[in-house]
Image (cartoon, rainbow, N blue to C red; front, side, top):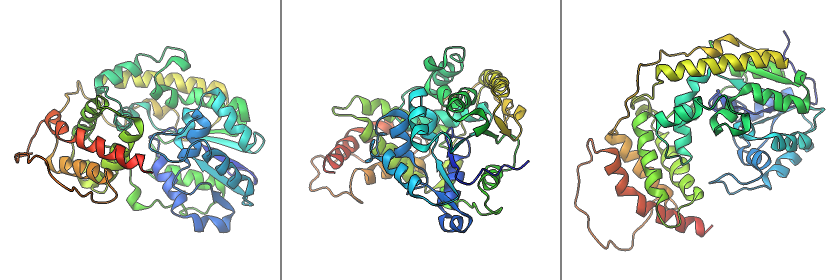
Length: 390
């Protein structure tokens, strides 16, 4: 089956998150020059058009980003000015759009020229990584409570469901965007039971690129945080939210663009941290939701690439129960603290004076709550000062 989209198409990849998006976006961004001879333009300056997607999908600026609603018209101008045969726009933030936000996006891109692509992994495989991402963005909700809140809300109306389900219900996404561009202009790509490079090869076929063109930057591997690391950040969020002047912008600067970005330079530490497993009850519930999504997708009549049935099965064996860790590896703790400190200043911060000398403590096997208490107040104050000066 030929997947090649007609010339003049704007391929809008809306995610959702945790479905191979980082590798795909890196493949396009890292090989921009290689795309040009084949008439493909990747819109945006970075690896994904997140600020623009947030602006049109939600109507506001994403926390931690300097660009606001003006990012969307700027991206549209780039798309309209391009003379490439096919233009690719990608951001999982588009999946956050409700009916109004999706309509704004399609109005700008042109319903007659836009083809929407949705990528998907087994829903059960997305649970742990989505929770840790939720924590990175400021959540204080424990893993077990997050699982229950999301998986027990699947029977509600889509608008009343938690954010994870609203962004991951590919049947709802397909119908929402299909109503705007036509269901024949929506493609769902199942990555379940597929080779690691399946998403890259599929997008090459969609855009007419030679096989092997999309090669991600090896430094862009989006390794998920482990359980201990995520718990540190979750407790930090709780302590930070109690500080005067706490804001989503400061939290994003300290955590997502500070500690986590710095820690990702040590993927060996991330991989060595305790894995966030999925309890059996959650896997069974996620499988049932995925089966329901599959039935609705088939009824919607959109194009499907890959094994749809495999989306109902986990790639790893679930565990009977999950026990939350109460400690974090000392090297991980050190990197998190260093990342927060670097985020609090322009490079290495300097201190004109030290008012009180604190005693030296051993950090080995320090409990998560104890570790967090040492960092919150000073880092939050420093970052607020830096942001105010921009």
